[in-house]
Amino acid sequence: MATALSPVGTLGDKLRIGKLRSSVGRGELDSLLKQPETSTLQRLQRLGFSESMLEGFFRPFFRGVFLESGLSTSSRKFDYLFRLFSSGQAALPAGGMEQIVRQLAAPLSVDRIRLETPVDSLAETTVVLRNGNQLRASRVVVACDPWNAARLLGKDLPKRGHPAVVAYFAAERSPIEEPVLILNSDESGPINSLCVPSQVAADYAPSGQTLISVSVQVQTSDDQSSVYPETNAILAQLSEWFGAQVDQWRHLKTILVENALPVQNQLLPRRFEQYSMQQLESYARPIVCGDYTDIASIQGAMLSGRLAGDSIIQQLSLFE
Image (cartoon, rainbow, N blue to C red):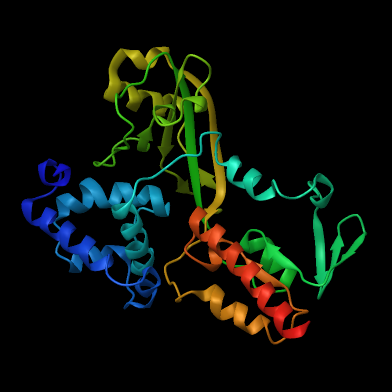
């Protein structure tokens, strides 16, 4: 009903939304990764969505998901994520995203985890640390970003990933009343989207205040470095949206994450499972996991970790 009454898009667009949701909702989730592949933009255009729907919803929303504005990301990834978005609600861990890592580490004793210990190289089941020390294990899992993984495994470096920039502000009150995502649909100004995380989890904000999160558009310069707007330009657009109250907002921090998301214009069906089966031939070879081996996302990262564990269990059953 909310979609039907929305001012974005035509009635035909809303019927197509229902048809798309029904289509991607059938069968097993992984079956979507075996469908014919094109770009997300071509997929939406072939489905017949109007230009107003593309520019008013799909482009600004998925620009924030894919971290690229051309919607060149694989249609397989789009279908996969659209199914998840349309079948459930997004969530925030009350204590921040770090709680996911803490929950995974909780069963381990403190002496089992080494922090700030860079790895220089790998030699089958031997890990050589930058300080020269060596660690030996029956199994080695490479769980890091794709660029360091390629270095450690002697592979070609993948292309540069998509950067992300988020500016955070503290305010006495929220500019919106509901826990919603505000999209910039006309592409004017530096802002892509805005949300208020403390509307979902109050502990995200400074005590007695509201936390405002602003995702801004990033440009790539000729030397491949990321360029993003000054705080004053962000505040100017926020003032256009919310008026004089913005003058009282306090800028907390602007964070740039280079290579925040791997480029996934082509997506092979469950690449990690195919790769992990090869590992069974030789348990001395490292097992690789990370979001880039799956659907690049927090979900993909966690799933690839579980698949890595499954692979080790299979190896143990075969070789020991």
